[in-house]
Image (tube, rainbow, N blue to C red; front, side, top):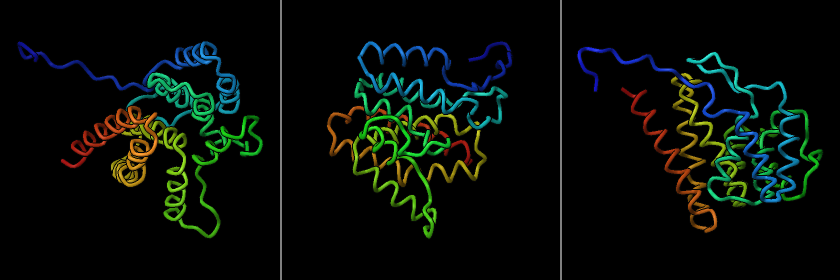
Length: 221
């Protein structure tokens, strides 16, 4: 509550939710601590392949956010949930390498499970398919692999956390609808079929729904 007619301080919008260098240090530290060999290699490889790339700039901040902050935040969040699976954490770090760099899936110098997960979460529209058809098939494939579901829901959780500062109203509505149609059902898949990720699914579902409902109230007035 403000007293004596005082005006509220000007709000400052964060460009990055967390410090990138600190997250990088944390990921390297827990990968070494847990003996996660592929995760250790994935950190270095991801930093190299995404070098010079930045996240979509926000409307209210002129901070240039390195792209690696996104997979690093995802990996820190996954580890905070108690996830120590080497292939899963490596795939989280590498999840955008095939989509957003020149590297093909077959060129990834990682084990078969890591490549399988990365392949499942990499989205492309095949020739002869509409974008909707491609999305339907994409999410259906992901739903058949618990670890791919984890990557996708953490990815979307991170993206919806920052979308209000980057998307216009039309894009916000489209992204909310896509999230409700395709991504939230993946949390049901985890809760029903993969008990080891049940708590992760609940917490991410709660965070995503909270953000979506808040944004709905702000843009539908």
